[in-house]
Image (cartoon, rainbow, N blue to C red; front, side, top):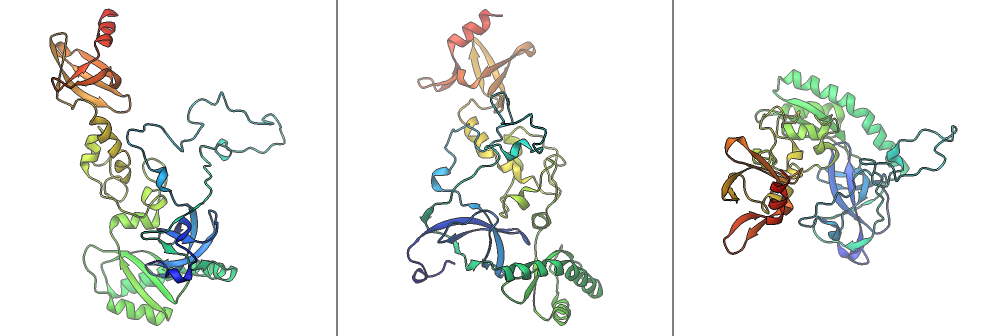
Amino acid sequence: MGKKKEYRGDEYAYVYVVKNPSYNDICLVAWDSVLYAGTPVVYDTRFGLDLGFIVAPAPQPDERYQSGDAEIRGACLHFGSMEDETVEDDDDPSRPEVHQCEYCMGCQISKEPRKVRVTGNVTWLDHLATPSEMARYNENSAKEESALVVCREKIAKHRLNMKLITTHFLLGESKVVFFFTADERVDFRDLVKDLVSVFKMRIELRQVGVRDESRLIGGLSVCGRDYCCHSITDKMQPVSIKMAKEQNLSLNSMKISGPCGRLLCCLAYEYDYYVEEKSRMPSEGSRIRIDHELWKVSEVNILSRQVMLTASENRTLYVPFDEFYLDPDEGRWCIDEDYLEELFSSE
């Protein structure tokens, strides 16, 4: 919920992405002045008033993905050739060693915030964090490990079938939140009473799923990078095996599942693009007539942008996407005649 309009001069403000590192909460917040990444702020979360950090200005409406756009944006400029890159004083022995990505504008994308009309589910910041609040935040963070130990002892005492994941002391009020997983509903009323007697503050126990467990504690995935759910977003998007099939990936559950035991979140990242590109090509299993012979579409490879055709006697033909067109009169897929003539004449 945003603050009432009378507390603001107008409906335009700077909108930022803010993240609470303690339980990986990410949301959009509005403020009436320019803030930069790393600025500590106090805002209203679903658990109460708490501290978070500005990540970046929120994406603007004109930065959305354009249908059919295969351009790579925000990619590291060092992915390809470095022949065109020049670095001043590269041979200076006194110059400290700096990783190439620290001066690569592809890796270090800077974007100045700008005022936009505040609509939708955007929270207004309560205020910028003060030095005393930062000190209290650091004190609370130091107490969280000991609070986990105490809570685990109480869980063992009451013989509850639950796994404690993490805990967090709120900044804006006297309250501590414990996150846990369990296979079934747990009656923790007696546990709460014991915890209140120890911490002398409000206690909230929040049950989460196995995917949320990975989102909260983080870790390294099979790609060698931090979990997407922990470092990129806190929204658990649905992922299906259909997404792996559409991208011609292995259907071995061990290869396409994350440490949480569920399908990898990244299966959804390129799924829409694959569906969009394949809709412009003949579907797998369809037939293409080439020189009075029917060839079968065996594979539509989005990465190589080629269609694999097979015929009798195990003959195989790879045709680029650009050479296909849909005949409007007959309603069937065809291959450019000039391409076929050049292809078969060179054999």
